Image (cartoon, rainbow, N blue to C red; front, top):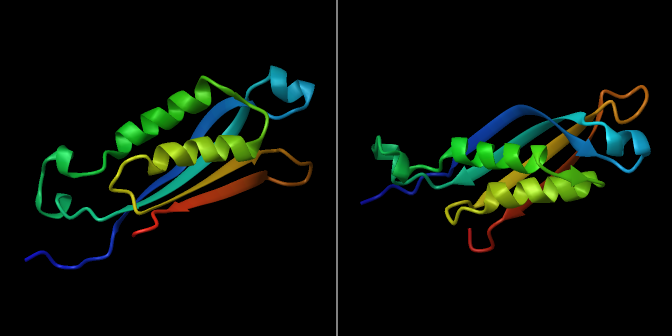
Amino acid sequence: MPLNQPDAIIRIKNLRLRTYIGIKEEEINNKQDIVINVVIHYPAEKARDSENIADALNYRTITKEIIQLVEQNRFALLEKLTQDVLNIARQHPWVTYAEVEIDKLHALRYADSVSMTMSYRRENA
């Protein structure tokens, strides 16, 4: 009989990428540094007692999809980029909760970064 355990939590921390992000001419013409943090909750019921990757949520696959999205596209708004990354993080049917924070480094004078955070919670979770 399976135990009722809290979700496992995957954290992808400080994924540093470069992309075109912004609306000013300088931003449109030059890639900028961004930092992505992703949190994904899933039950992990099968993976808790297995050594088979098919029983787990593959964070490597998720990360590769995020990298491809970010590096191969242009974004005017941080909101759009954040939502697109969140869509990747939440796409697997096992995901009960996902959260994405993206920092646009040096977006404002005197600030390290400006960040946007968005989350998703499966309704029946």
